[in-house]
Image (cartoon, rainbow, N blue to C red):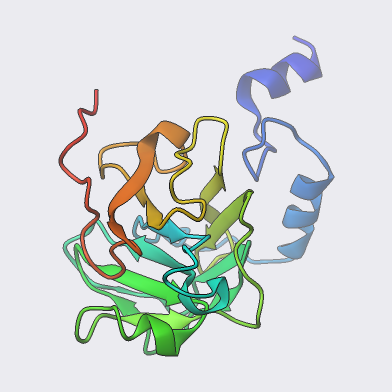
Length: 211
């Protein structure tokens, strides 16, 4: 069997899962050159991106005050977020005190002072780094585990199968149901509430019909 056919069949070297063994895969491997392979590999609990408020309506206020992301923990146990980080669209390195409760949420806002006025009491939250904002036409949000592996990559847009209402009309973009693929456009819909549901269950959960 030709080498190219073997790669297409197995993609052993496709470390970033983009269906190509390329320079990015090689660079990822070089980062770990010389690491010891003794012991079992680290495992981390599954987390999901559950809400994106990328273009708030002007009646709510400026994007710089009201943009936010939300993570959901589907596990019964709380997850300590130290070592995890969000990259690409925005950046944040989670701290020792950052914990997402079991079956709970962690909200990351562009302006924490504004976010705290709409979050439930004691809801865990943080402010992302720097002044960058979420792109109003779409971009990719990545969550990396403590071993720097991309475990979530949601490439939202304001068209191409994505709900248009979150693009400045008031609602946030919500993950439709916990049983649906996190990255698929038809797994997301617009929130039933102006400004979304930061730190709380998504408004459409339980209304979908996962196959």
